[in-house]
Length: 303
Image (cartoon, rainbow, N blue to C red; front, side, top):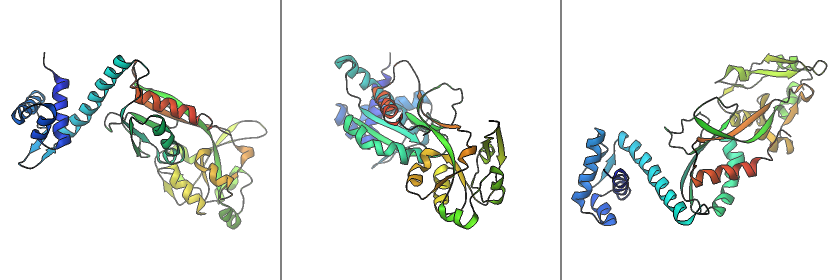
């Protein structure tokens, strides 16, 4: 039976050292043996993984994909061996790739990074912030932090926290344009909208007398694809927005934003989840990171 994990290790070392001879020295192989192993991988896959020259090695697009998968597989093998050798108490190690929305990342995740890495010094944390919904496999992410309701999928999710949603504006905007006392007053105001989901531009309000929920279409002259931008524009006095409280809690506490129409707030919640490829035995670095976030962010509630 062929040793594909061993071949992957040879490939990864050659890419890491940018040299067949360097990989050979590291692994106790001749440069020609390294070359033959990589050629065997390429022949089996039916595609070129490396572009070779006399001085350098360059990954092809297919090579990039294979390299990232190989890194992950080798890390999983090493972790499995550590757990067998040292038991479940083996400290998490290896690179952990995390993708998070910009506001959750900057306001909630990044402040916790120093404490997490101090507790788990063997983990290499690789964080990307993006407001697009990522494919964990295509983006090579171990964990994604997502805002909103979870759709059914093959992925596993763990709720980190929930946040009530509030209508907000800056004192400067309100001083110039007046304070809306009823949801219908928003027709006269500049409401900041999102450009990716129309439903987010129909704001729900609760009738305080009947308890019924009604939606109201709002309009304005500014659109964005993320809450962080809308929050910044609100602080700048551009208009009124409706955002999760975690986006704006600091600004409200500091008086830079004001919560509006609270008597009509339907108290709907924005849910924040950690999403990961689920299986029975999670990698220790993934499990430790998700547990850490859940422990430290559970206090982030609708209050």
